[in-house]
Image 1 (tube, rainbow, N blue to C red):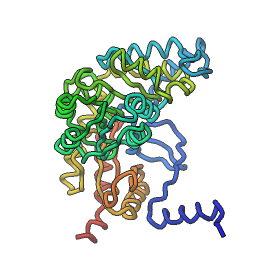
Image 2: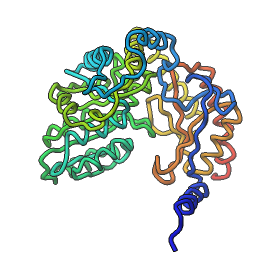
Image 3: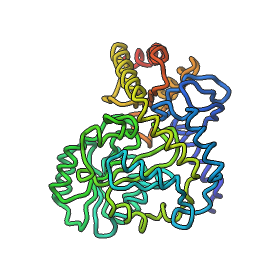
Image 4: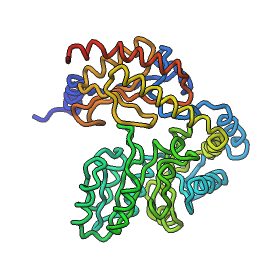
Length: 395
């Protein structure tokens, strides 16, 4: 006799609980910021992707309020029907200019941008090569594209070169994160661009965690390495992290953007984001240009945290970005350390498989320009104390 859906699903959920892999949502009761209220508790927030502290900036709220009088709230349709407002169009022009590219195209989310771009560029008879630690949206995009999908070892140029050498695919697309979301390290973009050029492949970079933070002007990882549109033909960036807003974009050549408009299904068949969201992003980009101190302060906080963590002997990964993972290893212990930190008033994400490989559960500490030096020092003290019992047992 077959089991009911309820029985099957409950058994699977219980297994996840026993493996300490069960995920639970928290209820945020305040705006994003360095201090938040979550589930009734006040916490210092080290788990947000609001890297520049812009998510609750008053100028973003003012921009939304002003746009409502002209454009209302709902966009009412997809971009290709009649939902593409003047504010959407202006934002695309500004993003293209800011990233040094011919054009940019807005998507409602980064996940949709990656699915749409990859599937529009490659299909049956083609090949897509992705770093093993790429974001899930990139991996899913490669899988649904219909192209032959291969994953190469993390930042391993030799492994990628061998795979490119062997393929006889019509089109070859290499896809990487600019900043890897769970490790915080950077892809070797100059070397990847050279390798792609040698093998007549196209390079696509998801710069979700670099855009706004890295580069002389905050244009991201590609700017950080001094690369051009020719070096990296496809750039994806998100607007809900360092920009403090919502949505995403793909930027590149005229031909690329027109191809996505014609073929990217998540773009064609999705209602456009509200024009007010575009207005807030325009305000955020202006702040990014005017207030370089935010990026400078973030860099100084990263350096301060790393010095303190290394002095305390904490197991840091090699990252120079706002993402600072402290690897614990065991999922249960990671949850216990995160809970100990929360009891001291610090909110830190406990990241476990399948988001990260087995045996590499970690605390994903994210720093923001909204943090003070004192908050970072207080976190280091609490983190050292919370980890001490488990480090003594393992020793």
